[in-house]
Image 1 (cartoon, one colour):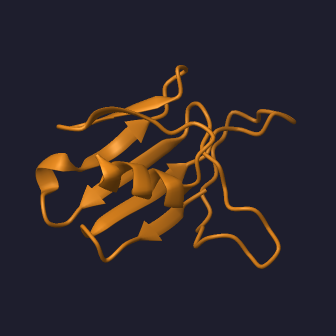
Image 2: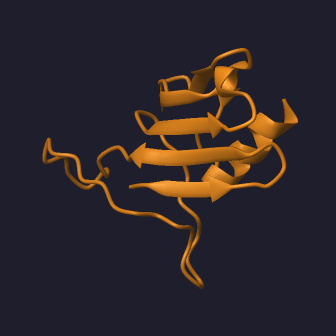
Length: 101
């Protein structure tokens, strides 16, 4: 899955690049689909272990990460900010947490 989450404050872009395989079955192949947020009545995607996200901070690329893998402990590592717990969060919530730091 791909996700886009934008904010004007801080110019932060969070993209969910690849979602982990569903618990129902693992084919070994990953598929990517564009994700622009939840459809009406659907919950927003929540990050899980092994998801890969990109965090792009336009004003300061030093803080960006092109591929941050959600580790088994539920955290990702970002430059300067260090570890951020993201498992179970939506891309919008991840954006807010990174901005908060």
